[in-house]
Length: 540
Image 1 (spheres, rainbow, N blue to C red):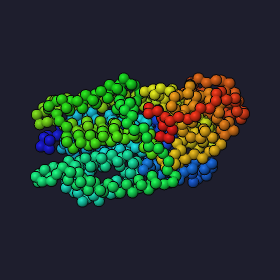
Image 2: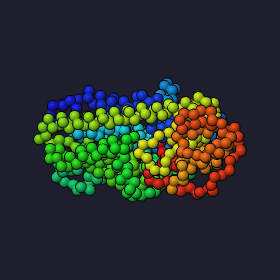
Image 3: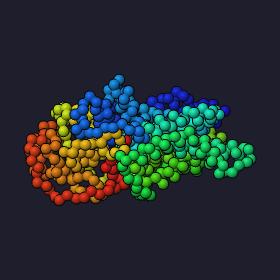
Image 4: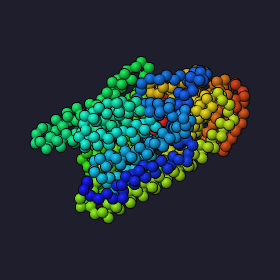
């Protein structure tokens, strides 16, 4: 494709416009409405304020350590003093889809020589379900990994292998610190590309065995290997906890594939996934297009990792789910036209891909505007809570994994972020984040998922029924009870709690009577979470 004229979808101006357009859904909301993000913002506030507000130590313990999950936690340190915490977080989150789109198109440019028209269909995956879930350190690391892979390909194409080896030692370490998964995916992509390059070199020389290309590819990827030392040090610490399990859960893996574009409207999202499948089938069935060996092998390797990876790795849930969108993305940008494809046909593919991207952006923008409205309404409660208050929050949800839900599960953490108040939604797993909770008086209502309540006991879940939560939370440990979209509850259980704010179903109580109400039912032992439910300690 190098000798062909540059078409409108291949120009630098157009690529820059697409990358910038990717940030549109995030421009309006003050806080990006990603499920876990408010919870992370609470941790960032503790990170920034612990030294100047030592009273936080009665509730939280924050200790820096070298772990593969520090992306935004570190970026906040220089940016928050300049922009303020909330704007700094917003700017970083905005950069994620922009970098994702830029990385995908840059990879396509390096592999094909020109950006193929079909590559535009991959761009909506910048707002994939892992991003919507608020796995922001992971999403940032993947966006950076895509651009580093493009740089890896470019330096190989230019024959700058020594420079590549020098650069990627520190770059791979920085990527690992951002998030381990980004580093791992970069390794998979780089190894597959290096295999093809070494195989072609051996084939040109008419010597060597295919196994030699594997060995040479491994040697070529050694500059990416130093973080293995960090990984061993991280996971061998006495403070590290977390299980690895739930292997080959085929129902869950199929669900992850269906949900790669999950946001608000199930029919819209599933039809969009069908569009992705249709383009992948076109790559196989239409003789005018083909798959690049480089990227097809990369997609195959990622798909293999997706199949082999368990759902939970070192206590981090949804490990396999995170890869599904990027298997699609790499497979989609692997498709390219054969020499016989007419300009008219290529332009039609480009126009359809652009329209698909625009429609998904419009849907995501509308969805985020609606979520932002619900955030704004809920956060008016903070005007009635003094700084430093002790607040237990109960956020309602159903046992079924509804396609669209409120995204309020970690909004209580904005109490911590804005008011330096205690919030019971922080994750507390040593070795997974820097922060753990230490508020012993809160008992079983100190950390995530104690903020989630349901109408009835959900089979296989850690969540409490709302009546049990109201009956059992220790009243002497809290000053306020904040209920967001709660299920129906027994009004007798809020006796002694004075309502001081209400917005629809959302309500804020002040705890005036410290006496515990009678328990509504005997306690039930906790059970492990199911594949499609929220984990008790999700990662960043």
